[in-house]
Amino acid sequence: MTRERKTQGKQTRKRTNSTDAGNTRRWRSVRHQIDALDVATFDAIANTTSPLLDATMPRLTRAADRSVLWIVIAGLMTLTGRPRARRGAARGLVSIAVTSLIANQVSKRLHRRPRPSITQVPAQRLAHRIPQSTSFPSGHSASAMAFAAGAAAEWPALSVPLRMLAGLVGFSRVATGAHYPSDVLAGFALGETIAWLTTKVVPVERIDPMRDDLTVHAGKANPDGEGIALVINPKSGSGRAGKILPEVRRAFPRMRIVELGNDGEDYGQVTRDTAASCEVLAVAGGDGTVQQAAAAAMHNGIPLAVFPAGTFNHFAKDLGMFPLSAAIDAIHAGTYAKVDLGEVNGTIFVNTASIGAYTDFVAIREKYEHRIGKPLAAVVAAARTLGRGKAVRVRVEDLDGDTVDAKFSLLFIGNGRYEPRGFAPVHRAALDDSRLDLRVLGVTRLASRARVVLDLFTGRMARNKRYQQFSDAEYHLELPDGPYRIARDGELGEQIDRLDARVLPRALTVITPARRKKR
Image (tube, rainbow, N blue to C red; front, top):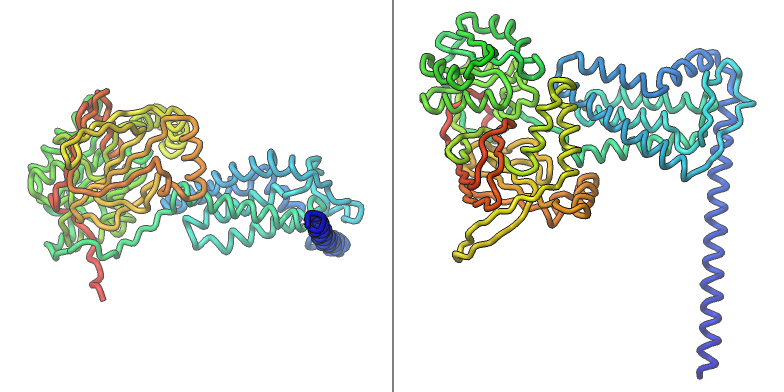
């Protein structure tokens, strides 16, 4: 019996080895056929006589060297002044940076594929710079598709033209003898994947100003701005706030305009004094300026009108007061709604409040934003903050009266429930749901920070066990190791050792566009 089993075992292993060998032979056969097709396609393009290819392909591939072509396009997109264009340019360039690193420093080192022979390529069509690195994948093609896909994620109208241009850049790499077609296709796949992963780390902003998330009422139409006072911080948004003034003056010739910015000026007091002497308080500036205006408007019981003039314009976008033309039309119509405000330790906020790593993030961002701009400063601050992983201890009393201690590195409170779930909340589906959105992230150790980075890039942050999200009308937390600095609406505040947060339901009247009726 034992001898029979040994014989059967040997026969089974022989069959398994035979099957494995057969699979290996079939895979090698398929691979040889793919390689043969790859080489044949390259030879066909190289042997094609075409003055058009000779004239255009070297110029196009030269323009894409070191991503110069895409940097120029990103600059032109930024100059349009459209927020979605600026976001698209930023996402595209970040996608290029990550893709180039992977393609040139990882993939090319792992796949030592030689470059194709250029003996068949017409001399006038050769690239002016013959690459010395390995061939797989095409770095030009990877960067081209990374920018095209990244920019198109923010501005879908650019998808076809940018992808067509990226396709031509990829073809130019074959036509000029730099790469095989499969190198180009692999580069396209890599660039597309990296651009997609950036949307998991920082979700694409989807704002629909016609959402039915508020009950909107008809108000007093105001075609010329009579009774409206505008408090504006011209330096907000890297000077963007000051640029809207000419258009605002044309739209509202009788509007009173109060400009902030004098050294030593108390912005909060100026805003409160202005609110006490007008029928509608308008504001143009960053989140901190909007927060002060919201508090003043609530205290005086008057409507608040928000012009989109900051860097990110979170509150204006969630209200539907974006772009500027939408805000102007809404103020002309005078339609209004009631929205919630958040309050932490007696001070209101319109978007978010936070302690822990975010306060470090704000401090670092403010240190650099005057030199390199707020968006790039935010990237630097995020990288440095994630590396620190400082722990904050919280003590809370549960429903049974027991005291529970917990540690975290980031505590985020949103005025209203934010979407999507995860590390990078973007927008609110409603501004009057009477809820605070509490998110806690614990990344105090190196291993947990590494896992967070991995989950960010794979879009699984909401499933990370170190991430928790809650929704309630109020929270009361003790900070026994405090005090800690608190940030409200992106502005650093006081030191606290206890956090008492609550929602103020429908406490603020805001000007907002009329929504369509639900069907």
